[in-house]
Length: 187
Image 1 (cartoon, rainbow, N blue to C red):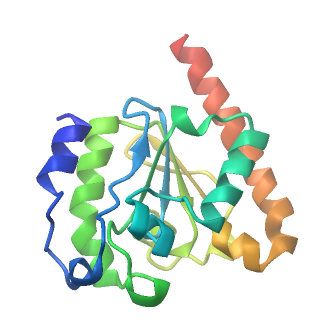
Image 2 (image 1 turned 90 degrees about the vertical axis):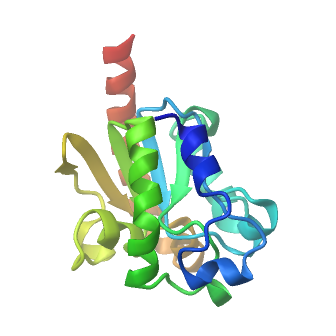
Image 3 (image 1 turned 120 degrees about the vertical axis):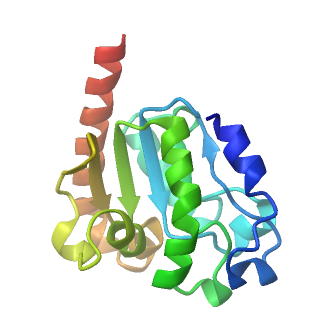
């Protein structure tokens, strides 16, 4: 299944109440053939307005982190667990994440990432372990169905807690090394 087909299928999604207030559904963007996929929590106000993931302040920080790690944003795929903005940028509920997980699964099938980076608690709990605490699991590799997964801090968290940027940078170096290894195997 192609990624564009998945996105078209859910373009008018009304499966949960989050659709009622959205301006745009934010499916994700980037290279649909990338071995590296980043998964955040959900769109914020800027993302809802533009229909693109990670374009606000947190997205600008993510861009700087990717650039420092020499991972071109255009070469990876970035999405969120939920595709519509939760009111007031609150954390998505378990039910909302479960509802959107069908879309995320189809994105995984279409893209076939080798490495998934979960940005923050919500995607980490949704994809790795429902009991996970990001401060305890960040920076560790996990494997699910042959896919390596690395949880790290969400850029919005880093904006509020700049002292954690050093730990996040360590995570990004490990992600960069894994990405280079994959590219070396493909080339």
